[in-house]
Length: 501
Image 1 (cartoon, rainbow, N blue to C red):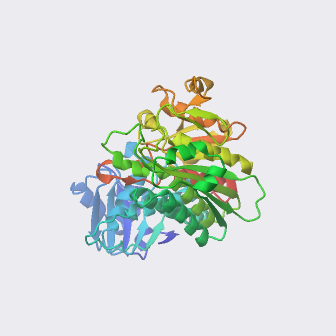
Image 2: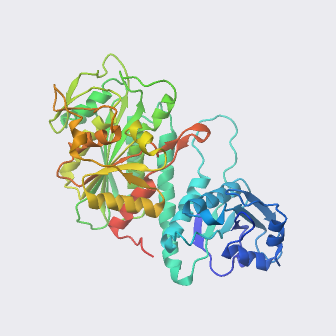
Image 3: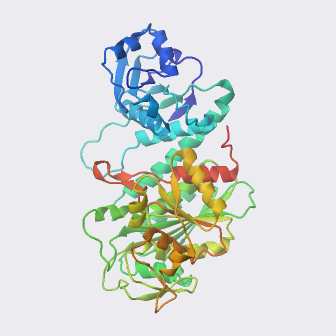
């Protein structure tokens, strides 16, 4: 895919199709008005007849408009003008690109004006266009045997209008957005694979392939024997019920000559989660193949850092295992010893993500990190609290938390901070071990983070619970690629890699 900006007048763009927006009631945006003027008012006459209601996501493809160089003009509904915001703008762009992906259009110039009430800036405008394009053109890596539709013909997208003074920032945003879109594709492809394909060993293989592809990446894979030597008793306890052996992945990006303490990203890599002996209910259990989405986000983020050659050091840690019931599986009441030496009473074997993460978080200490961020589809409680809209964020460091929240706001990949005070850790008390792995129903997302907090003392740490945001169910079931955009913005900003206009 080629990305660029367009300047000047949209009707003069030499592309296969131009895209403009119209509000309900027939109101045209600034760029659309220039197209209407070039056509001698044909757009206004069409809208005045009520042929295009302008509802959000409506589309109408118009061929051979007079005064327009492109052979096609795509009209996209923007909804009510009074409620037009960045989310509505994104939805309009997505609708346009999704429609064009089903045509033979090869090149398009987007002319949907972003909302003035929520300005993007030139850099983030470019980034958003490239990311939206990648998401709209994504095709699920399904394993259907029937004839597949042809791939989209679209190979060129230009975005505008952009002023001459903002051109460099917009092009930088497009380049970064294209890399983010590719990283999101990596996460989505991994997440969409079935659990009999995407095993812990498969994740390790994908990390090796990334290291072969990018010179700045190096990889180390710890097999079960090496994991045992690291005394990762919690990770081994989760894995012991499965025929699939666990893997611990260390993937490191060394950018430039950076001597700063590294950023460590830690991913939950449960490639399938039955709940273990605390077996889940059968409905939607198939979605537990997405329980490795945190691991996929870490691998995708390391790919992004390498693709953009970010001048920082980033280390990805993935604790990969399968949580299965068997005669060897851990049981409620069992006590295991973590890599930190702390003992954990297993009250619920379906609270396994925090067990594999705690050993990974302890492993992160050896790198003296400037920041540690774990990413995990950790709790159903977070879905109840925040739905599918915000990633849950908990942290022991206010500055780090605000960095992540701001990255989410800038990229519309938003997170919401939940409290993490000492009262929640008290719910984890155990009569038989240092603490239990669950603390009851109340505040379940927070008590899970409080458990992880027992292994992060002295480090600047943040926890992203992506259980509600990493995938969607229903007819459009599949991985969403979140929170790669948020993490990308965090890393780009930390690298000082030109995120400003």
